[in-house]
Image (tube, rainbow, N blue to C red; front, top):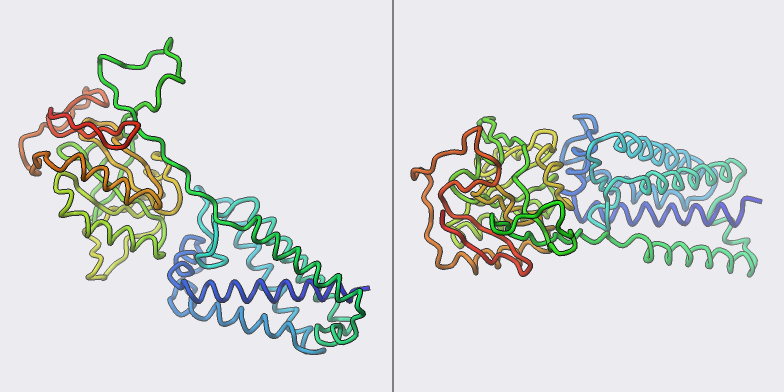
Length: 375
């Protein structure tokens, strides 16, 4: 009764653990980031855990192939691990916003969704099925040695179906494409009678949100852009994309002297004691309020705050950041640099969002960055 289905379950679990272990081994920073974002206990937030976990998963995968009665103990461990993973994901479903789980390292889209919980439920069911089978003396090696041609056929077909499902359904989700922002002037402001379809995009005021600098001094997004446009690189983890964004800040800072380029860590604390990536170059977005207000796509993105009190571009996902930077550089090539500290009065409480502040204003049109206005 349990032969073919149980063996297929064991082989699927073996493949899952091997793929998961290999992915985590190749991306330890993603695993460490996931442990932090999933708010696991402090004793698990260590670098050695990110290295030990994939080794443990790989060893457990091989243990599933052991003969009886050792197969039963491997099945018990697998079920316990799958239940733990299920509880971690179920708990993460209550977070706002939901983090990346890092279950498979940097492979695919790891955003925690209802689909993630359903997937882990299936894993628990497979582990439970295999445990029941092992209590009746079933083992992978023993069952395969007794398989008939028909059972081999059903097993191979089931594994082929599992592989096909993975390639069809487990591809990484595409990063939402950021819409270009259409500059608004007093001569052409949208009104309720205007057909929304006639507008490509409407620039909006910089949302109300607060960032903390390295000294934990709060600053609003509008306050940051009082004198100079601000290009903020938002990240929410310590994975490879985070340090790629930080490297972009270093590489583009001299190429874009008209704009301040700064990292923003949402949910995850700013890394400490790293000379290559000093904490003074980053803001902390407490509880991700700015991330939510700006509707940041993906795990890393860039957004341009205009000195006119409005969003000037983005947010754009990681795949579009380089093109976004090139557009800004092209437009600003001959634009004078506004030096911080020049007399530019901050907007008063009575100043409506979007009012000019007397400095460089950058606008994004349908074809990218295309308009510079000197206030």
